[in-house]
Amino acid sequence: MERAFAAVRALVYVPAFVFLWGWLAVRARGLDQRLGLELPSVVQVPGGVLAAAGGLLALSCIVAFVVEGRGTPALFDAPREFVAAGPYRWVRNPMYVGAVCLLAGTALVLRSPSILGLALAAGLLAHAVVVLVEEPSLARKFGEKYEAYRRATPRWVPRKPRGPR
Image 1 (cartoon, helix red, strand yellow):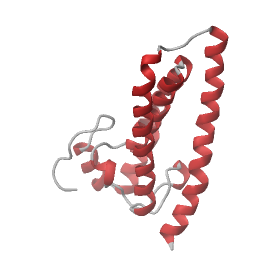
Image 2 (image 1 turned 180 degrees about the vertical axis):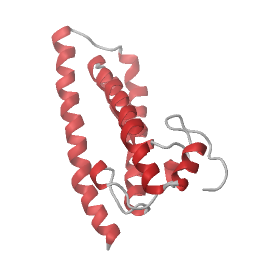
Image 3 (image 1 turned 180 degrees about the horizontal axis):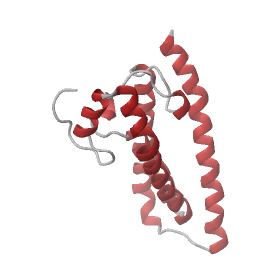
């Protein structure tokens, strides 16, 4: 029942979060039109691949949070259990990686340097949130289990998992 309730909460929070970033992207894209900026068309196909991969990665993280962690991606409704499964085996922050890839890929598909700048800003914001808020909170909440995970798993660049978790 707890997982079902987490899934319902995720179905509310995730679309709101996607809507927010979509709205920001639409607003940013308006800058391209005013300034007459456009990326070359050769970036569109790789952008589509990047956006799809990022979206799938973020979605798999949401599923892991609901199923394994009995929570949601929202900072105010985080998983109740420690999650080191799925994409979290390879990198500590795959949801942010996926979201930034989705946003950057969308920028390339739309040939929008302004949305690409937004993706960069989102990545910098994610880094600040992770370092200043999430990591200290996870260390307090999960103790040595999180500290061991943190030592073995990179923050941003995926790497083959080391040893059992």
